[in-house]
Image (tube, each protein chain N blue to C red):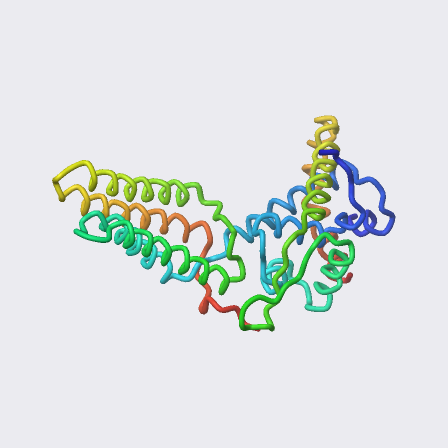
Length: 155
Length: 120
């Protein structure tokens, strides 16, 4: 059917157009749901926790925060390039929601570190950020299937 | 944006390559090969058509020159979006009864499509 479309260049009928759109959807999901290496989840969770803990530092808070943020970006970019999909956004809404919530915890820790003298909310928020990310990681892994044996694809 | 079918993007595999590049922005050729289940030569042929049309650009990034990276050009993105819009218009213009009938036919046609694609 599609071979006929290609050879004649004819306008596709609704059935063919619908099949083409379904194929697009399927192809895009396959790219966005490329399995991540397992080590990336705990690494990101630890780094998010570390970002949330930076307000506890007595000096160079901003510098430490930016440094950890840079490491987060770097680690994820390197992992993405090794997977062959550096910029693909996962489809799992649970995962994206959990990442957003974890990010909100990090921001809340930064704000609380500035406005309150109490230090206990900061580690609590750091644990919450890491925990939320890991919970999202479970949802992400379920949506993508098992991780590749090696994050570097065979040639 | 004007909805317009594009003869370069029209073939199934090329449409899927463009769709994957839209979803991933920059993808390694190996990723396309795995998802499309095409032989290296068949994939190269499809990608070459998109490169010739100026819809896709090809780069070798970093130290490993064996890894080929693809991304859509601005022209390619425009053509892809116009093509998808045209497909959506065709589906939207179809009477609902015809769509219901087509649903039933889809499963029966799918294996034949795959066979044709695999032989290409």
